[in-house]
Image (cartoon, rainbow, N blue to C red; front, side):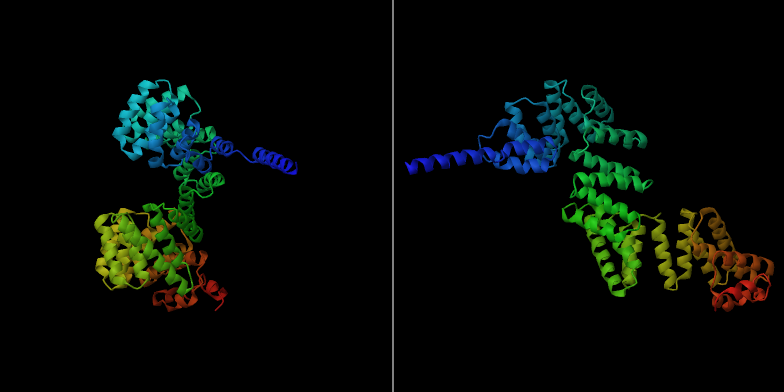
Length: 475
């Protein structure tokens, strides 16, 4: 009797525990419905191992794979489901995945077949419109995407794809409106994360604050998205926050997002970090890191714009001047109109005592970009070193004009008037020398020893308009 009661009790306990334990399928379904497709894949995976898994489980598992970008895994499952169970949502996912796995033409043929089968399915029109855009057929793409939105006005992917087309046409406002509608339609899906990244890319240069806000929304949805980390890293680099930039970019790279723009920004960020680091040991480490990332970039794309130039600057800082010169010249071979490469090679040659060649390159750089105040100043300084006072005056007058027009930094506002005062003093034009030196003092000039060391400025040392300023500066 006791054994019978024990058995009954154990049976009841088992039934009770089974009733209380969560249903794996229901848990996976919740994740799928919440658009947490990575979580849904983990939930459905054990159920899929059963060959007799329910069709809806297989369907949701395959769609989840497709929506997280695992096209190679999703495509055969989607194709099998389509053979036995007509489903427009599965059909559109199969078009998307087939394009990635087998190519655009195979996907296009399938898309035309499925359009005939599902002529009023918004998701199929969206998939075919996306495919048409990838094939370069903009008119067909717009037609199918707009048809998709007639059938289903809140279809987020259609809005996002139309945003891409608007952006390609140069309609930034129209693109952002479409992206915003896509995000509003699916605020927490993986697609909305990708759309937010796109929005940040569009506004990043002009509105970094808006780009940062959009990316923070994306981080709240998917904290480990490599695309979001990469964009955050690039945005922070543009703001001069190189330490933070490096952290995000390395995190994206470690998740196998090995894009050339990530490698380029990593190299640039380490280089800039090194240039502002007062510790020689840490500076050297950053330069070695910059060289490593830039070499990886050039292995992947030997003609990446700016890469050889940044490598040249890095090598020059490391003391490898011969290789630095080769890197600058390689950048110019690839991009003859690169102002930065012309400038860097010109400065390098000037340091090597090749003044005439340096002057030629720096002049070419200035002719390509006449807003470069510092270039005009450098050319003026080189002219004075060669005893060309007329050339020095011409270049420094140009630099002075640019100074006034472009609200430059203190170095320009101080150094350019000081040099013009020198030139005026050399020409015995005391009045002009005083006026320019006063402007340098007003901008913050405090280097009394530099002033006194200039023979050309002795003409104004005792001038009553200058002497009080000098006397007020602590020696």
